[in-house]
Image (tube, rainbow, N blue to C red; front, side):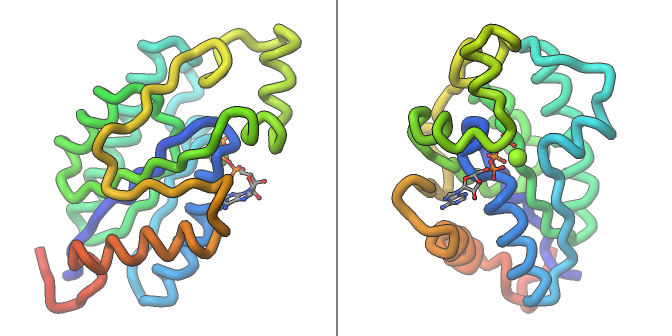
Length: 180
Ligand SMILES: Nc1ncnc2c1ncn2[C@@H]1O[C@H](COP(=O)(O)OP(=O)(O)OP(=O)(O)O)[C@@H](O)[C@H]1O
Ligand SMILES: [Mg+2]
């Protein structure tokens, strides 16, 4: 069996997590890995329809995602998680629980995220229609020791994805000889 691992994409809303997750998924599938993407909105709808965006709820949700990720990883799956996961200690908990954990900071200045605003969330936060958006009212704790940092305001999507692939190769997650 291949060695499973998790690529945990963390970053502000609209920083590029979903876009990178889908591009990375395609490449890993081409390499014949078993891939699952656990991405923000869809996962929240399915795992945590009961939860909101308080710190406690965000933590509970991150714990659920980490648990599912752990189950998949131990069965040889390449799991790509796209989750704002704004608190450092939740990410550290996930790292501990999952083990084969590659934290990717999807970095992008908030001004650029606000310009992109594909879901209109920043606009709503500024208009006061939502009061708990990460980056506006809620904090985002920047990673201090992520395995990879990509800057989507400066790099192309391809460059960002290649950086992640390179790190996965370096960590020997993409070789078949390396088994768990
Ligand atoms: N280098 C890049 N990498 C990724 N996305 C980019 C890049 N350059 C521009 N973009 C654009 O930025 C936007 C990022 O949106 P995306 O939905 O991927 O963000 P997200 O981090 O998943 O946000 P959310 O937390 O709200 O789900 C997209 O419109 C994408 O096309
Ligand atoms: Mg997303």
